[in-house]
Length: 207
Image (cartoon, rainbow, N blue to C red):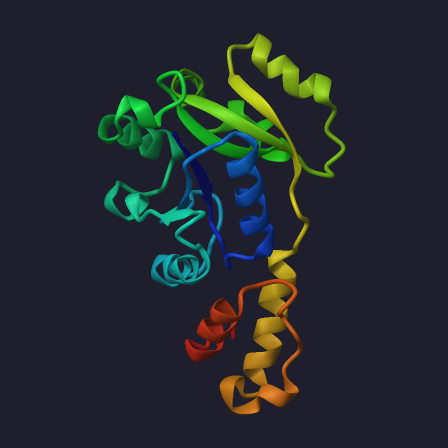
């Protein structure tokens, strides 16, 4: 059975990888499938091809794979559309009780009823919900179960890494000259894979 990890991944960082590794082990998933959003409805983000390429650089085969499924669907990228496509193209042996396993944090899950077509999500997704330091109480999460949402709680917590901080540091480093001025760069090694870092500079991203 596989589990799906949706996100913008702008850029993919160690928080994403750490979470995927622990979720895979905790629930004995065969692999984690990373699904970068093609055109998120409520936020501007880096071009899909760059985010897809960066994920391909940092997601190892023993962890999972990267899917371009959202680039084949109608925009904007609503989760219910992607989940519907997954259900139609995935063997039942890869599903969880006939539903799509879907990783989501407390802060996003608490607002799931505001997502596009939440009844479709309720019917077709088994959420793997993890804690984040967001002040949300567990009782509020379990209230969603009473309203028909199917989920399990992970024992793992999201490794808090700021994508905004990564992008800001990358912007500063690119302003200073990118690959030609390595000695002047601020260090990003504690946040992102080295291959991702070099991809950012080679393509002058976040400048």
